[in-house]
Image (cartoon, rainbow, N blue to C red; front, side):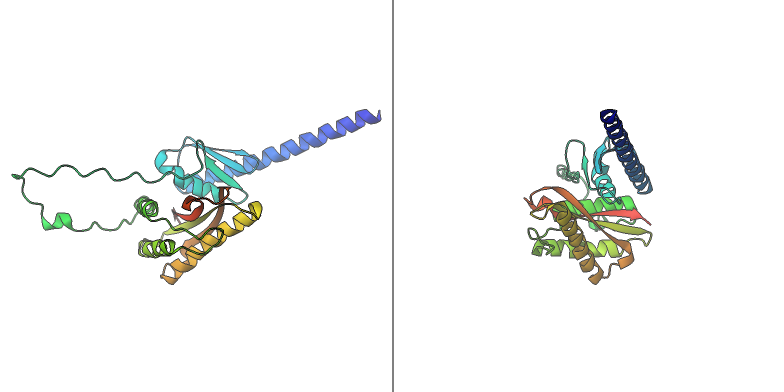
Length: 237
C-alpha cells in the first residue's frame, strides 16, 4: 500500500504543477494580446512556453513593435518572433527614378521644401524606426554607458518625441544579451540602459511622464551593436 500511496501523491503533485504552469501561460498570453490590441497591433498569435513568448503571423512592418510590446508585459522573461529574435528593420527607400527629360518643366521651389514632421502615432513610429535603423542608440559592452554615436543618436531623436502630440507616450526598451551575471544581471543592465536614454531625453526637454523604461534580454553573449541598443515604441496614452 505504501508504494501505491507514494505514486498517487506524485501523480497528483505533477497534475497540480502542470495546471499552475498552464494557468500562468494562459494569463501571460491574454495580457500580451490585450497590450497588443491597446497599441493597435492586430493579427498574429502569441504563444508561451513557461514565461518565454513566441510571436507568429505578425505583418513584417509590425513585428518589431509587437516584440517590444510583449517584452514589456509584466512576467514575460523573453520574446522572439518565429524565425528570428530581432525586430524587423525599416525597408530602405527605393532608388530614385530617372531624371525627367529636358522638355519637362523644372520643379517648383515648394517641391524641394522639407516635409512636415509626422503627428500621428503610425507616422512617428515609422520615423523612429527609420532613424534608429540608420543611427542606432548603442552602448559600451556590458555597461549602461552610451557610445558617442549612441548619445548623438538619442539627442537627434529628442525633438521628434518632444514635439509630438501629448496623447502619445514612448516605451524605451533596453536590449542586452546574457553575460557573466546570468539572466537577472542581463535584465537589470537592459533596464539601466533604457533609463540612461530616458534621462538624456528628459535633459533634452522630453516630458518625463511620456517615457517608460523596459528591460529585455536578446540572447547569450554580447556581440555586435544589435545586442547593445534600445528600441523606442510610440503608444497611445
